[in-house]
Length: 143
Picture 1 (cartoon, one colour):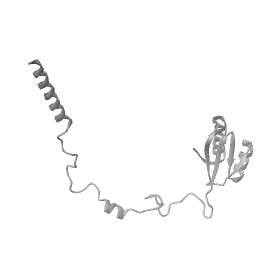
Picture 2 (cartoon, rainbow, N blue to C red; picture 1 turned 135 degrees about the horizontal axis):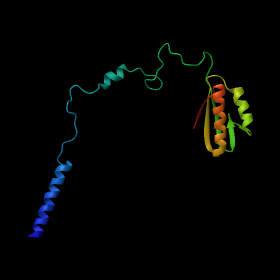
Picture 3 (cartoon, rainbow, N blue to C red; picture 1 turned 180 degrees about the horizontal axis):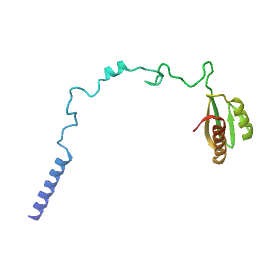
């Protein structure tokens, strides 16, 4: 008799758990289907597409660069304790600093890339770029 009671209790618990966990529940649906939340066809027709989706420059906005001058990206790659800029290796940070000052024009961007650099050497170059940024307004990005 005790065994029957345990089996009955087990079946009752199993039945309750299946009902409470949602085995017999409906799928999730929106309560109100009319009108739809967004009309994608209308949104696509009204969108103004640019190079990067809808990020086009509005008329009359200033792009920040001078007419007739092209912005240049200066890439500095640091590997180990060596540093390269424009496929030329520099053996001292002073020569790199001098070359940056002579080549940099307003609006250019310096990109610092870490190619398995030694941490202390990379930090020296990063601090040099921060100093140039604060003193002369050089724009740089570090990877």
